[in-house]
Length: 424
Image (cartoon, rainbow, N blue to C red):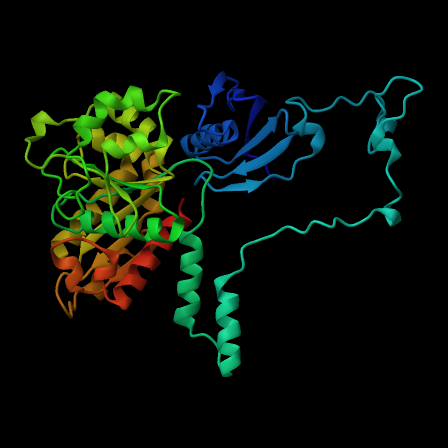
């Protein structure tokens, strides 16, 4: 006999507030800011429980919009639940006093008053809805129509790209976080962060933050476009409480980040001119900054430093939904990536899941790098996916912009972003 390992969480919604009951029975108050939806806050809290416990969580919400069920898997994926309305209306299962009532609807109205539910029309007379659900037309259908007029079908590459665009363009309930990490410097972390941020922002509608989470010489600001203000993460930290206030405006964050005018994402810079001792971020400060990021952005991509013992590095791992490990097609870079994955598997259960679900990106630093195939094959079977990025002069140096790349390279980054999105 199989045992149901799904955990259960409950929330009762009252306006912008809710009472949340965790799977272990702890009751927590939740409050939404004026710019947030309380239901998104609830889903975020339940998702955190699913990720923390490594088990699926059935979320039951009741309130002014009725009862709803969601199943949140351990990887953060959210799907509609199939539980009964009776369970949705109460945290406790219904009590059946008389066995003969099983399978029958019980009228709880006062004598002489017929329940509206008992006045339903016969099934044969139930009318269909005149309002059909509307979905965005799939781009692939337009492509099929175009190629059909030519008497040919779309290529497999075109179909794959359209599917990857669809995956990248999806939205999630609540902010998602993605960590780009490798303990060795010069392996493409900054490049990977910028390219993934560009793809997600260009195809998903903006609200993407690339965060230079680096104590020592973070160079994301050097390879991206400067904004109107010469601001870094050290300027944002003292303003965090103000930015979290109910009176804060969505545009207030613009004073502290650097908007990429073409690729449409924002950059939160570190200061590469300062020593690490002058810009360390403690765990509590990181958590405060993460609250700000989650308030203003739907997706945060961390460009990590090389110090895997730093508090901000460890909190980045603890706060991330998806791990992306970049490596150049060289033995030293690949070995560093493999050692990081090994260490995360041994750290704790959540880190192990991040490592098992990781996406490894193998980039050719030089044309015709013959070692790339061997390195890519070496990671296969040890992580969820491996993506190859061929050499492109637009990645070598200078500003990192999606439009500077050749079509083949852009398609490869689209493939990498879609793979990461599937883990979110």
